[in-house]
Length: 291
Image (cartoon, rainbow, N blue to C red; front, top):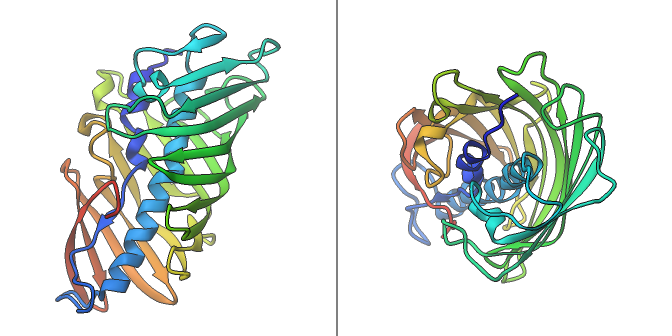
């Protein structure tokens, strides 16, 4: 199989995304979204992006053919800001990689990381059917936001086009002001590889089980939420890493029993989403920092 680290990295911050709400602090906007409701959607998107980005960092590390230890240069600039150590006892069947970020540089998106990502695998290389790798975060931070927890990634592919993985995990995110959010995920991720050109690749996120939320937890405001992906979410390599959100797909976010529909659009590489609640619709802009 031909691997492509540079394509994996393009999807990276499919995962550093959040909704920039446009409501004022005390008013309800014309979509029926109060400031708190918009912030609840923002919290869900921000947490989703931050915890899911580790999938791509882990895949880049697993795909690396670099030396056993040392600075990794080139395709994934996030790994250029880290020391990647492979256990001496590693084999194709099983092993461990430890990524250490010292906070001594920024990636191409201006993000600074500290702490460790530890990746352990069994059952063969990550792109082999039935292989499993776990990703554990140890003191890991992005721009001062701490993320704890772990996830397992199981290759359930029946063919290499697409490669298909089931992802399950539990995470806790802590911000500098002491607020926290918890998140459990259960979803399926496909890498659809083009036979023509890497920039035609795409990634598709869908429900693993229609009866189980793709994500659930408690946001920074102490509100319980759950997520159902009603139309698979698609990320295009051609949009590049600076498009931090899906560009196709629909999900339903339920916060304290109130349902919000979030539509990511028609494939245009932008940062706009459409939120519908109580029959009213509002277009919101995406901001990776969740301000």
